[in-house]
Amino acid sequence: MALAKLGVVVLDCPDPRALAEFYAGVLGGTVEGDGDWVDLKVPGGQALAFQAASGFVAPRWPSPEHSQQFHLDLTVEDMDAAEKEVLALGAKTLDADDRARTWRVYADPAGHPFCLCAC
Image (cartoon, rainbow, N blue to C red):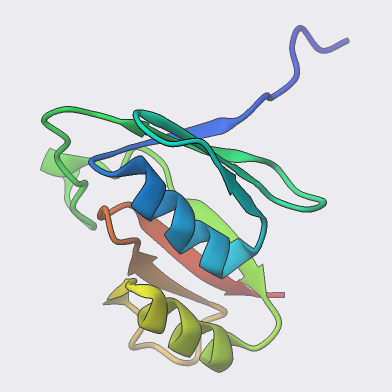
């Protein structure tokens, strides 16, 4: 029997509303709240939350000195179309050169790594 249920995944960032809007553009859903805590309610999926962190330092990927801490794997049907959209929303390519792989690595506007993964 589980001790707990996962409530929400929270990402520290300098601008919670802006990062929530980025992920709403990627995942869909509704952005709720302003200020130091903003929620993204994703239809049929796990909610994400974004928390203001003073002195936020973005992870560097790959770098053992500046660990990514975690990353999101986002499953997509059309890798090339999804890549074009996340880049238009403000993502940056970190490691997407190998087109033979079933995944590509990007950074969100706050610098958190995430992957687009073929389903």
